[in-house]
Amino acid sequence: MVIRELEGAIESILFALGESVELERIAGAVDHDEETVRNVLRNMMTKYEEEDRGIHIIEMDGAFQLCTKPEMYEYLIKVAHIPKKHVLTDVLLETLSIVAYKQPITRIEIEKIRGVSCDHAVSKLVEYGLIQEVGRMDAPGRPMMFGTTEEFLRYFNYESLDDLPILNQETIDDFKAEVEQELGFELSEKESDTGFEELFGEYDESDEIPDDPEIEGQMEATDWGTEESDDIE
Image 1 (cartoon, rainbow, N blue to C red):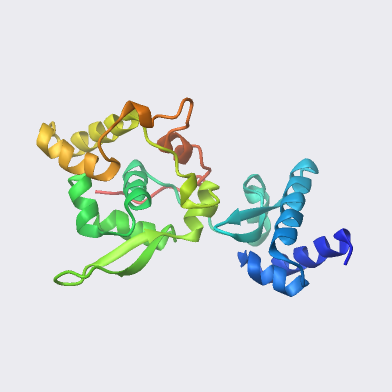
Image 2 (cartoon, helix red, strand yellow):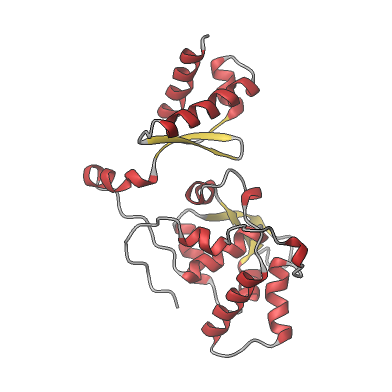
């Protein structure tokens, strides 16, 4: 099978399924080894970008998906009448960050870190498909544990959770300030350490990566549409 034919076969598989497809499945379908298929896929990804196509291929945890480029969304909703994407408030972003870095994690553990109730925030993130139930903790009451989804990787353009940026001290301090503002009083040193150091670990300047983008900046830069968000208490 020549390269052009192989690319056509891979493209047809991704288009027809309309969801992410594991590399192993693609390789089996086109009867080639995984390394060859991965190289072809990445060449296709580069070609789509260079040609400024309306579609692109994304990679997530060893799976690939053919998607419409985010900047084309406004054209699509004029034809398909797809609802506007949900807007993530600061509360939702903070809750999602905790789940992303500490998963699997229970609702009670999230609330311990944030210092406020998170029932509504967790429910909304599940509704938006960004987090999901991933099992139950082996503890009294067997509380439900949550983790991020493939949709989370897709929306934030991560290939895997390994791509999550390392948070620096300034970002951690910002999170602390926001929680204090919600609570209406300043957290004591003990209360502050209990939550945020449990989430991020004891800060060490050697952990910083020069010019590494902060998660808050990356998340806020994501286009979540213009629909008004639900009020979060």
